[in-house]
Image (tube, rainbow, N blue to C red; front, side, top):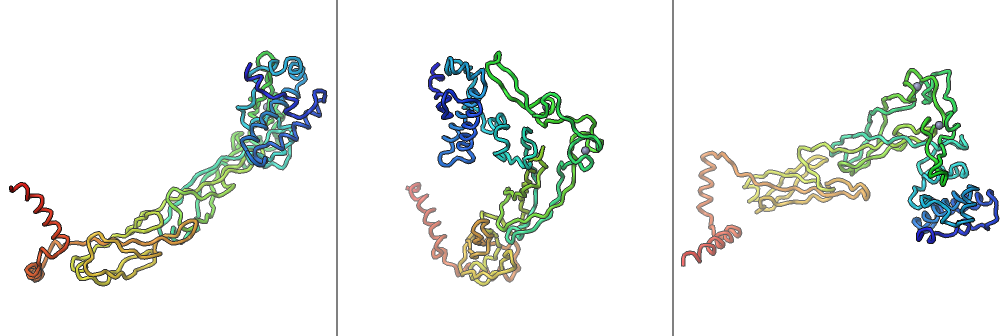
Length: 386
Ligand SMILES: [Zn+2]
Ligand SMILES: [Zn+2]
């Protein structure tokens, strides 16, 4: 009861007098539905959708003479409580009243077909497809044109997608008379439900003699080869969309899209962190101590890096702009070179002697890091001795 009283008067909703005829109701509804269609409405979309549904509900009742009479007599209480559009999908409402819009809304789903069938159901968009393409890091840096091959369910060439044997053609569905929809009475005629015709599954036609090539499905698996442009800076897992390369639509609907997912081949030298490239370079401990020129790889060949004397293990040097371009800004990231000091495992007798001589000159307490370490060690054991 409380729900019913909260509803606005249907005549008020459509902005018509209680005496207007059916045509007037239809005109009023058509105008308001155009105005409040969520795809067209300006301003608050959610509010527009609520209004749109309210209008549809009002029209559903006032366009049916029996329901209108009951409504006139008993108000909202005369209409079954099930009759509430607020939870319906906007596109379902459109399918329901398709005939009065005459395809005015070319489609929330694309609905391509050039307005061929007045009362026929709108075409359904084809399925999207997915494929993969593998790139090298170089290709990520420059962008690439790739040729990809994939299979898709295309229209059958023999029957042009109709599914009917050549020479024959699909016939109008006897159950729905070609409408693709059937009305069903529910709750003892209290309301009318419009559903997709179960016999033709909404197509409006049925096939008598099946096409031999496709067995009546109208589809055939075909191999497709397309070129795809990959922009510089793409990341693993991103997809490039090729519009219209998916499966063809049904009943004149548009084709789906092809989503081409990117994988990036592992590089022997570089790992990627966002738009930066990280490269680990082994150096000898003498290089680290004395400093010098270090040859490092970049994506475009070799570069020389100035190693300062006293370079530490794990230290990172930046080569500005030698990373990968950002996919949006095209600004390049950096290359980060991390040096790893390698201690030789084998020494010649001469090297061993030189190092012994070197060690003899070492003043352990002077080397800053080691000094700190020895101090800490002393502090750690000092209290125990007492
Ligand atoms: Zn066929
Ligand atoms: Zn049918």
